[in-house]
Length: 124
Image 1 (cartoon, rainbow, N blue to C red):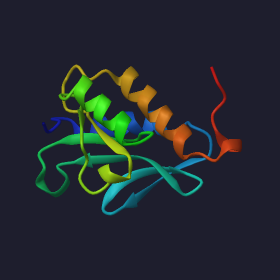
Image 2 (image 1 turned 45 degrees about the vertical axis):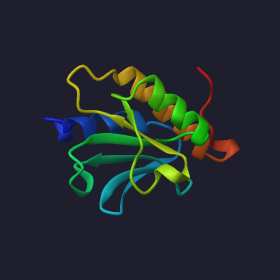
Image 3 (image 1 turned 180 degrees about the vertical axis):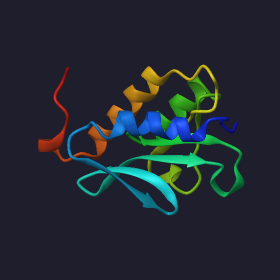
Image 4 (image 1 turned 90 degrees about the horizontal axis):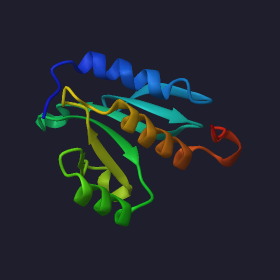
């Protein structure tokens, strides 16, 4: 599903990603990407190659976690084109009632998976 407010969704995602330690944003393969130590931890996709979806792609621990997430909530989670085989999962940002707290929690997990040990965020 496509978001009706992709610019607002991207701004909300930036507000989640950029305060994390030593992060940055760049365009990668034509889309906004967030990184730590040159390792990507989140991608924003809006109608990527005409897929009619607005998602954030985040890292997982691998295939088992990906399958568990998609089985648990196939409306929220989906297999992202190209990067799915590398352990990424897509999370829909399109619904008006998107749970941004849940999005933030998954982005933080992805950040922790990408960040070198000394850069990992302190526990709250």
